[in-house]
Length: 225
Image (cartoon, rainbow, N blue to C red; front, side, top):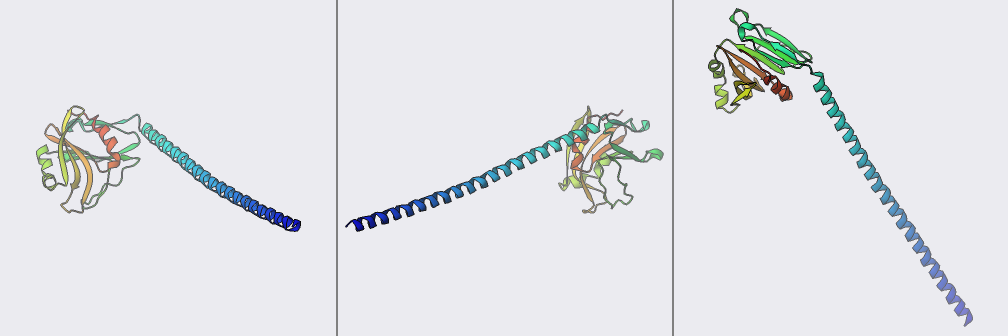
């Protein structure tokens, strides 16, 4: 009887020890699992924090670079066209270069190009495309004659037309694909504003969305007789 009691007590103790061991193993496994999850979550949080910090630093660097680039453009230079073509003038960034392709002598149209750092080569073949920050043309024709070239493009919806005022000067704004030779592939997307200057026509145009802000600033300083 005592032996059976002792044997039962031993078996009970063994079961209790086994259960306790299993509980400890389970608790240990749960602890390890919890720790691993915590570490994974912590790594994810740290990674997200690091990414957010890196993005914030890059954004600030980009903003600082943009502000520096804008400051570098100041003070502006003055563009001054020939006196006999209406004394056209405006201010443009000092970091840009100016190239006068034709000075308007011999009753020819005046043409000049402005671009950051250096002006790209001016195409001699009308079928060749080149993009410039600013084109300045003074045509020896009336505005009606000059704008007639764009009538079909406006009718076809490739170019939009509107009336604008810059620095007190009224003009016609065209925006869209500009035709050169009639070839549909020979187009440059841009914005141009045409002004009547005495018996001539002034066109100031940009060929790229990139320079739109500079273009607007230039137009807002436009002066002519």
